[in-house]
Length: 253
Image (cartoon, rainbow, N blue to C red; front, side, top):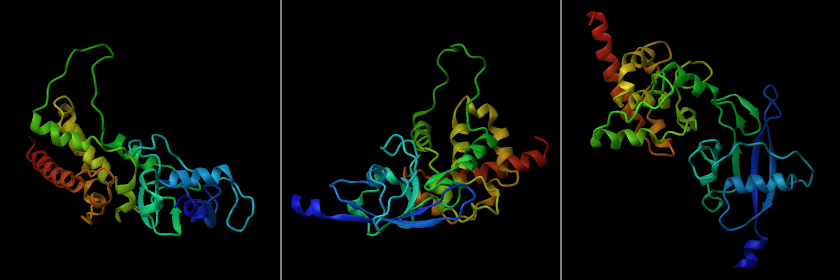
């Protein structure tokens, strides 16, 4: 068995791009197989020996990664047509040839490296943080009810990986829709006893162009989220809250 594994090789087809203004192209690689490989391991093998399947010397493939345990969200890419984390994409579970490409929703910097600035701008737009008064220790904050804390914890698992935006048909270069991740973060921070002080500001941000009205309810986001975050539940809850907020504004409340 060990001898068979040693002789086995894996074929990768990588979509590459030399720069932001360059045209994408594909390059094939044949790398030696090792048990328990993930896609990051395969890319590291190319980095160690940058030779393509034709035997020609090439440049190492560029990609991003950090934690290697599906927490940081940095290694998001499209693997065999599905946006996901490369660190948890095991070679043994993938159909060959393994096709790897950058996520198309975001601008490509180089090869598999993308600019996720769109997500961070969306989080700034909805004020996805809890402001504090001063920089000194204010003591323990208010406690959340256990029932609320449990579902809020599920929302806090978001790692800003961008997979939900890649899967959403309403997020593209022709729209300014902020995407499901930012909407879910509004629900998270509005649920916090301290964050609730800025609840109306966040809801108002969701009611502007590119906000919650951009959701087409395809539900691709919740199916693709690697952390299993109930994104569609958050979108539904924020739909209800923004509607209430709209009526209150009409009534001058």
